[in-house]
Image (tube, rainbow, N blue to C red):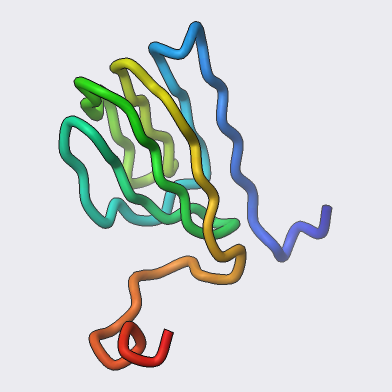
Length: 90
């Protein structure tokens, strides 16, 4: 892995606790879905009763708890939210 690409790790414990590193932005969150961006692209967490337990802006570490059903990775090159115009042309 090339260091210029960034780093991201995900550790899922018993489908109840998720430790993430390399998070650059949290786009949206509710009890059923958390959408965020990592140094390696988009990540959507799906489940039930989800909540962000801890977040560190400085280190990019995030802790999520709840009934985790899926981790869905999106575009690898997208690291930030799209502007309104970017969403139109997506």
